[in-house]
Image (spheres, helix red, strand yellow):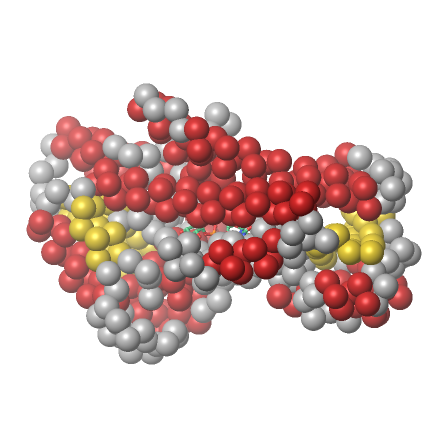
Length: 448
Ligand code: UGA
């Protein structure tokens, strides 16, 4: 099939490359000229496993093209994917300017051919209907709007696109649904060549529903995952007070298949470009609909509190005196496996420590360049080339991102570099018995 992907960001690029690798002709359009020029040269604007390889492969096979002109590709496309950003406004509402701009540009170029417009961007419930009205008002008839939310995670975008847990298709037009099912058939049946991921011995479940339900499914999924994390963080805070160990508690909880063992890692809370904005947006959507979401409000509050509790822990560990002390921070990305620092709890903690008069030595395997951009020019922060470099001469070492490689550091060496052997683990990553044996004073979340 011939597909135009509007927005060559995380979701757009990953989705488009996967669809191209399955044999479709994919045209990427993006308003950012530099991004398009870079992609034509094979340069990916973010760090994500397999994306560069797929870009090279699909460029070689001639299945993809990049452009910033809608008019060259939309009139001949069977499908147009809207994958533009829906960032948050300060009041928590969703900024829909990019989606509106995209639909305007698409509308200007639609031909008489039947075109399925697929909304992958996370948009408030009711948006598909609005887009449909916009195009109908402009005189278009031969099109359909399908809500097809994306559930991929940063760090495993390609793997998640090839083996999703489910595919949700929201539409009231069966002709459009059929087109989508045909497009996704190789994925649903797990039939594709050049497998990057192991083929699963099962069909991918398909959920056919209305546009509104598909839109709500996306928000509900992210809200549920954040609820799970805030829940375990709340239990961790209780565990700390009553002398229990949250890692044992979470392990036992997760063994109940009704609960499941995923997303039960206590720590400094959730961040990133999706969870915070989506939970706030759902809170707004609920409010606008006349329902006050009590649980969602608490989920957000627990998350905000979590990083401040961690700051209190750092302060306590340093004898209630942070000012003038140098602290090593391991991890600035919002999670491991990515260079993304958007709404990263680590960045907020660094900013707070700087405000309290600390000096910071930060290390991250991937995200330092992005951290430099958001932390601006601050002479109180030094970006280090290794965890050992960061540990040299500091009063405490804190762990803020769950990078697996931090588990296997040479803690004997780390201890010899620190001014005082204080280790505060915001992700419960480190083998506590091992570091305690080495003589560290160790703090974690929800365990002693
Ligand atoms: C999240 C969802 O997992 C995806 O399904 C969704 O498609 C995506 O948002 C989106 O809406 O675009 P992502 O933002 O890549 O994906 O990050 P996650 O892997 O879900 O992690 C989010 C945050 O939760 C991170 O800060 C992570 O450290 C934290 N987390 C995760 C915990 O604190 N504990 C856990 O047990 C799991």
